Length: 426
Ligand code: SF4
Ligand code: SF4
Image (cartoon, rainbow, N blue to C red):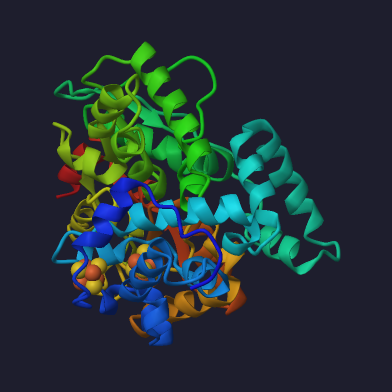
């Protein structure tokens, strides 16, 4: 016990602490526990520390800060928990208090706050990406060198969105391009929109610049900023979209964040109900594609495929099955069964910048699995995973490619003309 004020947690987080019976079923699902074998780096250990700090039995000091900093926030513990403990509610509450006391405890990398501000300003972000590519040849401090090394080489010039006429008209769909995807991987976004349109989506756009969903802010304890961004998003959707519009994203972390808006704004009388409604309209790209009325035809190219499913898509949005089914059903390619397919790769928003050593250790396990299965191509559905895997494969001199699910599918999609030609070939 120290003279520090106890850890401040919102009532919703305290309720989650009450649900945890310390059974430990979550431990084998936790990437940092798998790597360290230490209780302090397990979900149960972290919950115990947060509870002790909230009760005033443990100082809100370095031990707690280190334990929470090393947590990726992947939420695999929530999926594994038989008691339904919503771990991320407690984690975000605790990190918010830590940030208010001393930011550096949660964000040891000094570049992270600047990075978050940059991502929110799209035009500046795009300029920074161009500058970052050019700066790679210069001698840079290690934290900046790590960031610039993650920028995909060569730039990505987006294909136009093709709007094939669907045979059966489907629901209105607003494609949420999201900050990092639109700046670094616009082609994948365009590919996703083309396929959604071909499958029957009626794509609807919104005038003006799209805002940030707030995922990165929420993960590092900037809860108020995340709430502000969420309100702005919901206001925009409310103003411009019909209530039955699906909100579709090809970024698991952003999709999961938008699906949490109801919880994030639960105490906000003005925004609670609209936030709940729009959160229920969120679909990941693969889940949306599978639910649209016109089934698409694909033909594979003899590849051995590894899936790195976004952990937030699996554990937050709970739509991780759809990409697996799409890949498993791909004629001509083979989805390799990888034990870590649904486990976090270590990217974790800004985690790979904040905790580079653990992020690399976790990634090494994934890449070793892929090498053992002789994977030719890694499929990703979150931009952070794409950057993290690409950098890891390059650093090891690996031969596997990394591709966004939408681009992989678009390359294998047989549009009606190609389908007819295939049928004639026999
Ligand atoms: S979080 Fe769930 S699985 Fe983990 S110890 Fe608590 S009750 Fe058990
Ligand atoms: S969020 Fe992920 S890293 Fe953190 S305790 Fe849960 S399983 Fe472990």
